[in-house]
Structure formats: C-alpha cells, structure tokens
Image 1 (cartoon, rainbow, N blue to C red):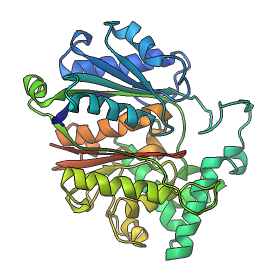
Image 2 (cartoon, rainbow, N blue to C red):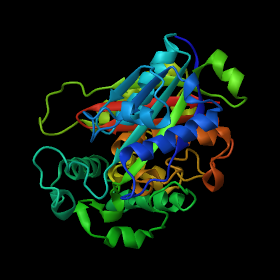
Image 3 (cartoon, helix red, strand yellow):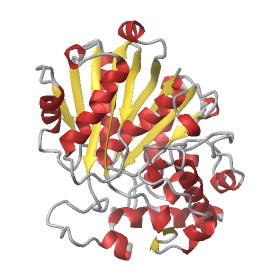
Image 4 (cartoon, rainbow, N blue to C red):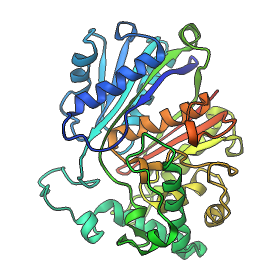
Length: 379
C-alpha cells in the first residue's frame, strides 16, 4: 500500500438551506476542496460520494454535472452515520492501492429538521417520536448506553451534561458549526429530557451540510503542497455477533475493535494523539467513547470530563469543533467533516479553536446498523 496524503480539505457551514438543493451544497464543498488542493476536476481520477437519504439517486454523478463531468469513475456510498467516512476510506484505498493518484471524497446530506431516522419507509414526515417521546431508536440506544455506564461505574447525569457544556463552549470558535451558543451546566440539566439522561442540549441537531477532501499519492502530494496531512490508518469495522438483546447495538465493541486496529496500523498508541474528533451524537456517546478509544481506563471517563482533560488546552482535546452536538449531524457529511477538522488542526488552520502543536489526530464515526470508521492522520 502506498502512502496517501490529504492535500485539499473543505466544508460548508452546517445549517439549513431551504433555498439550495443537495447537489449545490455538495458542489460548493467539492469546489472548495479542489481549490484548496490547487487543482481542477481535470486532474481528479476518481470520485467517491457519500450520501444516505438519497442513496439511490446517483448523487455523485449529479455533483459531477455541476463541477465537471470528466468521465472518471464515480462511486456512491451509503453506510449509516459512517457514510461520509466510508466514502473517504474508499477514496483512500483507491489511491493507496496504486489504482489512482488523485481521488476526491465528498460527503453530503440535506435533512432539514427531520430526526435521525425519519424520512425512511412509510414514516409520517410531519411527526417524529424521537424528539417528542424519546422512543426513537437512536435516543433510546444512547440513553440506555449512558444508564449502563452509570450502573457499572457510578457515572452521574451531571458528568454527561458536562460533555454538552464543553462542546457548546468549543463551538463558539467554529464558524462552520450549525450552533455557536454556550450552554451553562444548569441550562443543560434543566432542558427537556429526550431519553434520560440525555436532555435536549445533549442531543445533536440535524440539518444540511457537505464536506470534501482531495487525496493524493505521496509523489503527487509533494508536487502540490508543503503541508501534506498523511493518512496513517483507515479502518472500518462492523458489529460482531454476540449473545445479547437483538434490538440493541453494541456501541462499545464496534469502536474498540476499530481503535485497536487503527492504533496498530498507525504504529502509535492513544497517548500519542494530539486531538480527537469523535461521534458525539449524544453526550452519553462521547463519554463512553473516551474509554472505547482508550483515552482513559475503564470507568475513568467521568473523571476525564470533571478534570477538564478533554477541553482545548487539556491533555487530550476532544471535539474542538463543537462536535455533532453543536456542529450538527447531516449524516452523509459528518464523516468527511470530522476528517477535514482534524486536517485543519494539523495544518494550524483551525482559528480560535486551534489545538496548539497538533501533530496526530483521530477522527471517529459510528453508524449503528452497524459501521465504525477510525482515521488517524499525521503531519
């Protein structure tokens, strides 16, 4: 396998764009990534497009008609919340294998105000039980995940709430975040309960967004940039079978297996990370993933947030972007956006949220159903 670098990285501000369609949003992100890389579509040899809600609508080819229909291979990817990061991985593998020298990965989604699961099948688009009763699949899964951590380790609802406080505080410095508003601990705790212990401010908003990255072989990368960001590991796992309640997903094993493989491939340990962008679809998810990614020992995640270790300026900053809780979670865009955020920090281009001296970063996405991607990037 050849060394592969990210040379172009871009995302649009996440939010809601009723005056634009999905292809326009994705095209804007892609054109920005191409410009950042200093190339045109004529030099791209392969395109991978990640989109979940229009998975059967040939989104990649429609984007190409906007930014340059050059006739190169286009692959469309759908893989739950890991859709965008899976698209990035496919682009990475295409270059690492030697099949292509330059590939473009795009992640996009237009969800508006729909919940994480509405819009599929025969669901009534005017009503979602997710936000009203907390009975939707994802709020229930991650509420139960938090309760189980409380049972095993004595974790408190306040410690979960502190995750939301941190991420909303980080978001103030991220112009790409859907929401840039601080939420004091009291406000988080007293907000409407969605699926206990997660309250409203502990749940990610959905909306519209797009992100893109240009990947190149080492030889090509050195022709276009003096700041390549190297892909040290690219891992995708699915949920292994275990004897458990079949309606529940094992959010922990899925990530732990991916983390072990990623650290081995990158030749590093969690202690070598400068920063992490992880999948905080709910505050409970971020806290348990501290342990799943081995940022601390078993049962120590509550202490990690209590002591401020995961704030920017702490020992291991997590979700300097504001995370999904503030940045938003347009499903197909999220995975590429997390990778773009890490790349910006490694380049020193993250503005007021910059993790100083960042050299190694990890981007993590979990899609229940199931899929987990972890990418480790290095300067």
